[in-house]
Amino acid sequence: MNKVISTDGTPIAYDRIGSGPAVILIGGGPTDRSANAPVADLLAGDYTVYNYDRRGRGQSGDAAPYSVDREFEDIQALITEAGGSAMVYGTSGGGILAVQAAARGLAITRLALWEVPYILPGTRPAVPADYRDQQFALREQGRHGDMLELFFLEAVLMPAEFVAGMKAGPFWEAMGSTAPALAYDAEVAGDFSLPADQLASITVPTIVIDGGTIPWVSTAAEAITAALPTPQRRTLHGQPHNVDPAAIAPVLAEFFAA
Image 1: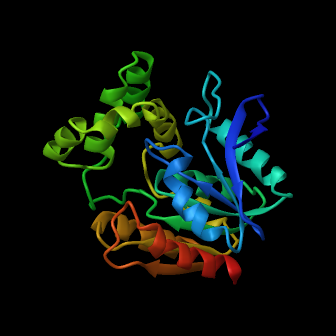
Image 2 (image 1 turned 90 degrees about the vertical axis):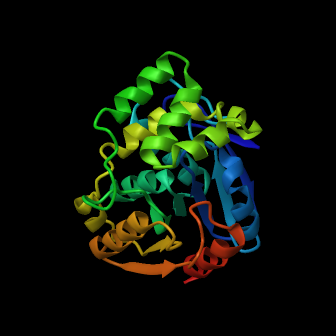
């Protein structure tokens, strides 16, 4: 485990494995860098992979007050550590952050996106307008389990009985350590609408990948592809949102090698 110091002095923890061109992995949701570790291992034969804990997660630090700008500074610190430019893979909510980073002009040379959860009107119920405010209020109150429940019920649209089953399992408590960062994801996502202007400004090669198992996510993937100037598109048929690393790693490796 290594650490790089972001602009505001926050230490950002990351694993650096493999050799070759640099690839930065950006995760989302109630996870730390361990969620992307299997993909990192599979890419490490051909790439130098920087798999990091976003601020407020895992072994990275945090600083108040939170600002999305700090997330971009964290990514920039990793890009600098990687030699000044890097390819990026953003998964789920991490894909929203990756899109924003590329649109801001960070030195990202190739961009891969897995099931970015933009919500197109009419494809599913909207996330409550006060979702972001609810998450920050729950965070302030230390109600981390309630943050997880709100995320799974309202953002993910998981059935209540499934959430109840998750709460009874041992991994619910484990997710509690990263739950406070769900407020940060809510800040990044805003109203979850498709940022057509941002996507249109991304001139680097970009691949949009989905599993075809969640209709509203697949519709979003099509809309992202239509908005990008230089897109590629792949569907890994039958893959759930928690994609099998062995299924997606070869697609990423091929795209990054082009």
